[in-house]
Amino acid sequence: MLEDLSDAELLARHAGGDAAAFGVLVTRHRDRAWAVALRTLGNPADAADAVQDAFLKAYRTAGTFRGEALFTTWLHRIVVNACLDQLRRGRGRVAVPLDETAAAIADPADPVARLDTGHDVVAALGRINEDQRIAIVLVDVEGYSVEEAATMLGVPTGTVKSRCHRGRVQLASLLEHLRPGRGTAPPPGTSEPGPAPDPLQSEP
Amino acid sequence: MTEQHVPIEDLAAYAAGDLDPAVAVTVEAHVVLCADCRADVDAVKAATASLRALPPAAMPDDVASRLDVALRRERESSLVVVPMATRRRPSFAGIAAVAACVALLGALTIPFVVSGSDDRGKPSAGTALREQNADSGATRRIASGLDYTREGLAATLDRALAGVTAPRAAAGAPSEVTGAPGAAPGPAPSDTVGVELSAVRSTAALRTDVGRLAACIDALVGDIPESGRTPLVVDYARFLGRDAVIFVFPSVQANGQARTGRVDVYVVGGGCGSVPGGDVLDFQRLARPNV
Image 1 (tube, rainbow over the protein chains, first blue to last red):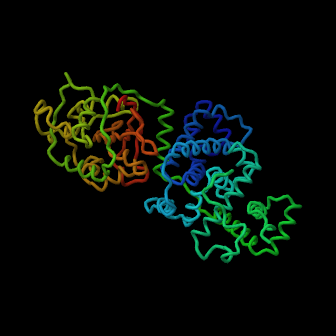
Image 2 (image 1 turned 30 degrees about the vertical axis):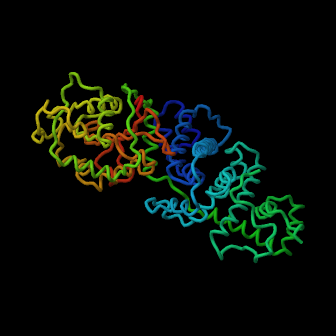
């Protein structure tokens, strides 16, 4: 059974011309690839494009996988790059207001979104710096180690940590605005060094 | 006291346990005594916990099946180029898919007329497609009954657009064909329909039920920008011997921009609009120069 084979074995079979092997890899990894793309891009249409681009690229370049990294890490690096491409392509678009972002994510036609109780978290995630967002998606949402995320992103581990720290600060600030009364904001007039800087500002 | 507060990013690093132990001791000493910094640490910890509590997102069925067909196309080595003459087709942005469905069904319930079945001197399929669009601004509806294949999809589509229909035996319902070949070849190209389809065909609901047709179109392209949601062509036909409907959409990117010269062709079975994934039998992105 192909399903019993490891990722590396399946990839070797794919490279050897086994037409069914890659399909098993797709079935095995598509949900996590989807999650990364959806959380990073914030909408299902862009996520679908990015994931499709990524899997097609993985399909075509499977021969370049050398096995030093885990297949998951290799695939996610491709997914992350496809997401960055999508973000670059959509850069000219007008920013979507926060509540509309949440409404789009909460589309009742999307059963996945319907089960998602973290609308405010998702909406806030869509508002923070892209580099910080991807780092946070990989580490906090998907639970990859900082080392794995660093390999996926092609940056040093220190950079991943720093992006996560900054992103969490931005996110905490946004969530306090989204959840009045639930935050831990200090009494008016006493908050230093807050309030946090412009939550949309780019990473220096 | 303000200048003695810990920078917020250091607090985030402290909250994550990422600070150098010697620095962490100093920060801890401050945080224990400073309510503001403690609140910031708590807020960052709460935000991090919210992220970790997000439910897993599984790939929706329709995205998964589109991915499958895209990979199958890749395997079968991709694009088929169909020659096409020059002339731009008009933009379809703003035409709601449901409105298109209603118009589609409205036209399909009128008696079908065989026309354009004369192969000699026929316009190229590309010309027919563009002229129909330019004239009517609507979906071209065909019931060619032709049996499409993966490899010959583009060529069969060209034949269907040129008015070729399946031989009557294969088309299934010869007695329902009305009109006469050669009669009124030109006046209403958008209503050109080759062969009436039997009501017992498995794709009949997609022809008679506006809700099903809308649900089908939604399953196929509901998540892409509106300019890509109105079909250019719908052909009630067959695919590898089974009943199928061929949808031709303008190919658009996620940002709504047209992929110039490309159309997206979906081949669906009778379950489209009622089963997860849209009952997609095949998907091909065809090159259509100058579309």
